[in-house]
Picture 1 (tube, rainbow, N blue to C red):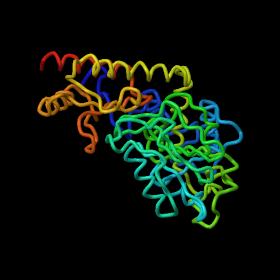
Picture 2 (cartoon, helix red, strand yellow):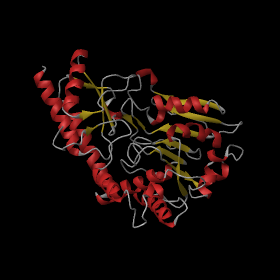
Picture 3 (spheres, rainbow, N blue to C red):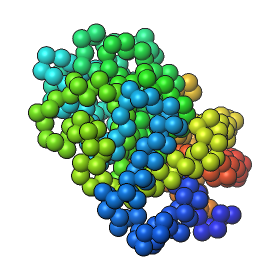
Picture 4 (cartoon, rainbow, N blue to C red):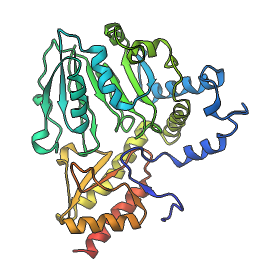
Length: 365
């Protein structure tokens, strides 16, 4: 396969690579978790053993992201896609509007879900360029009376990422950070609510993290189904119903791994180095490869590019697959290639891809 033995170079857009040490630890603990005689999957979610796992994961995330006591950290289910509806259900009132900044397919989905619940409009959009860039901060237009402003921090399909976030003052700023949460430090206090499916940077699919400012819970609509009220999850420490216990355990182990490998600053540096390897191969190829995203909007998580000629592109993807690279096909709406270099994708995998790109160019120029 490659020098990693049976492990492939996993560039999948999600679910994505998990740290090997985390998988090995889960394997060791799978049958008998901490002397309980049961797997963590078999423990009651009301047991003290599980509750410790649950609370430790929340504490670790608070520490790594510097989340203050003004915020609740919740684990919910249904992925980012359920949050598209949950946000307007809780916060979009009949007399207000919500502003959505359009930067890709996931913004579009969030926008169309919100339309089902009230008045929404686009505060800015880069759709005219097939989402090659993130709108500049002065392009973002919203009203002081808006219920909230919503953005998607990183766009997996188009390979763009926000460098800095708009300052929305008293208007709550809500972000879908599914694909770049924990990839670099962010000022959590700029946001009223952050949500993220876990399956890119935090753990396996099935867990969704919500970081919500406590004052938002006061504003939330209480006349909606119980499971869709943020307040219910907050009041019950995300244990109102059976949570995805195994997913939360793995998420906690991923957070331990981040801590052990130097914390968020070390991770940011590594993510920048990984992305540079691949962007350099693109930028130094004299047009053999070219990126989808504008240079100043490029994502460190999803690196989207094309090969100059369609037949060569097919050949590139076929040969890459033979070399043990997985998940390099671009999304059908953009085409081309996409390397998703999330936190757990090792530096060596990005280096191997960069070297493969250079040698493929030399062989086919």
